[in-house]
Amino acid sequence: MSQTEERSLEMELKTFAFQNFEMPSDCKNLDQIRFYIRELSMKIEEYKRRFNYVPSIAYTLLAQYNARQSSLVHREVKKSY
Image (cartoon, rainbow, N blue to C red; front, side, top):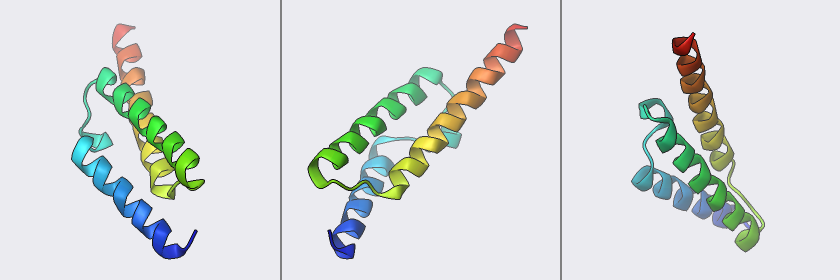
């Protein structure tokens, strides 16, 4: 895959995320974050299957959502004790 094609896929993924997801720092609801994680994971699998390539931004964004989820879970656990 050429660098131009890789950049094109990265821009496509960024556009998809910008149009369909809230930024991880703006998410306040665990169900919302879990939905985004599931959707992003499916998008990553689709890119692997179709292009045998996944832009690094996908993994970065997934890590940010996972970190936000962990933060919210920690806060909920702390609140309950």
